[in-house]
Image 1: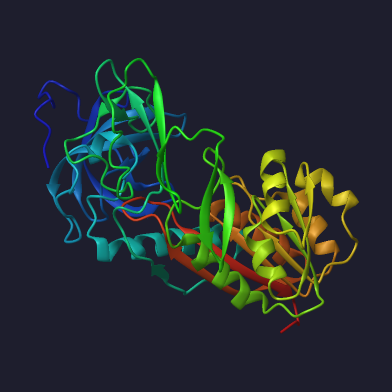
Image 2 (image 1 turned 90 degrees about the vertical axis):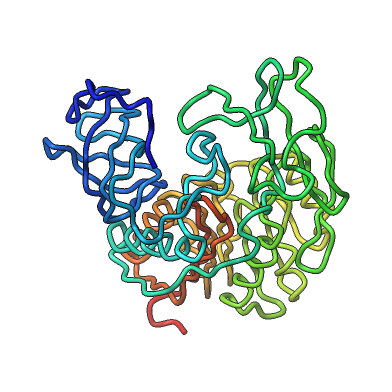
Length: 389
């Protein structure tokens, strides 16, 4: 890969935004879709679109006090896992930061990231694998496109510039969502949803139907639902297998959304209380799972009003994690088991570290590649009191 815009007059060791550094030898993969390298002065440079062992030149995109961020723009020595990106705008659109990696090699890179975050932030050694979940393209069932004057596109990484979609449309969008059906016509953006009702554009807060865990779910078109068509069932199966719920047990489903895990637990005869900050989602959860109880509000604040004892807890927090206060509140209830569903391995590791320091242990941890062609990975960790089964 080379970039004809690289000028011979550019200083190879400069660190200003827009300058090109290198050649640099690329080190291991890092969290967030970057690889670690160092410039001629020893400064750490987090490089996108690279692979370990490669020799590259990279254009600086952002500078911090002790490190910089860059995009590889010329590959002088390629790694064996490198492939030609199947989408012509992969290096520009910002969404698919692993398209230059052979599909079979992507789960291993994600495994390395999960393992590194766990050992560094939680002191936990993990030797598991990231489990592939097909499909690896055509999976994204919720998309948003941005408009130029005449066409739709995507935002590059850390940018609000619009990169127009290629003729084929978005490679990871689910069938029917590869590109909007009409030109912008003055609209700044458009959302598409692929659900059990079909493909819908600009559904907004219209309630749509999803199908998972043996039942139908009402979800807002602009609300949260797992974007891979097999994600909901995959995660429910992992949570149930890890918790082994028993009829009559009491459970908390924290950050419950529209009630996916609450419904799966209730179907096993568990008495569930769900908590969610989105009031509209809570209303839908109550209709989706009428046999459970739901509370609208901040999980951190709601902890004071929840039952003082729970047999099981499911945590499915946003990317930032649950945080110390929520983790402490969950542990204080001494549940038999906790299922922590995480879309960010760093946040997961921080929260697990707190639990481990409080006398808990990780009984199992599974990771799933639900976001092919991207650096994202989903994990399900099962926590039990140390000494528990």
